[in-house]
Every structure is written in structure tokens, then in C-alpha cells.
Length: 101
Image (tube, rainbow, N blue to C red):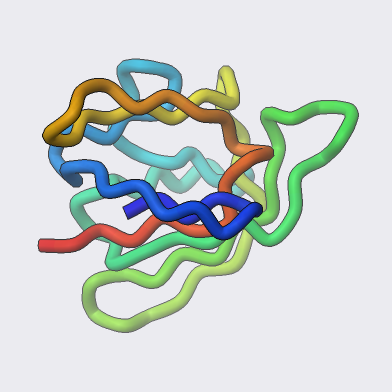
């Protein structure tokens, strides 16, 4: 489920969500790669307005642990599918993604 900055909620199947149309994970500035299937949710706290590919992110893992760190993406686009069709948006338009299982 993707929640936009404007409050719009869009259901997306968790197994179809990709970053930059192929990555199924977030690459943190520390070098740690966190796969979407290990996350309960992530929230975008801020996006660098000059370089929209760098965002401060809070990740809630399946075990409840929380990681807050900057993440870098090779491009800022998130996409996935729902019952209607394909959903495409960018990091700067997203507040939160929750993986419903």
C-alpha cells in the first residue's frame, strides 16, 4: 500500500513493487541492501530536493527493528501492479509504503 504526500492511498501487490523498475530492495548509504520482503514498511522522511535520488528513510523490518538512514537509488521511481493495472510514482511523491502480507 502506497500513501502519497497528498494522503492518496494506492493498493499495490507487495511482490510486484520495484524501485527503478527492477530493484526489489533499498540501498542504504551505509552499503546495506534491505530487500522489500524483509520490510513491514518504510517511510520517506525527506528527499534531497536537488538530488531526488537521496532520501532519509525509516524502515520497519518484519521483526519490528527500525532502521533510519539515508538511502540512495539509481533513479527515484517506484512501480508495481494492482488489480487495475500498473502504478508508477516517484520517491518525492511518497510518504509511506506498507507491505501487506
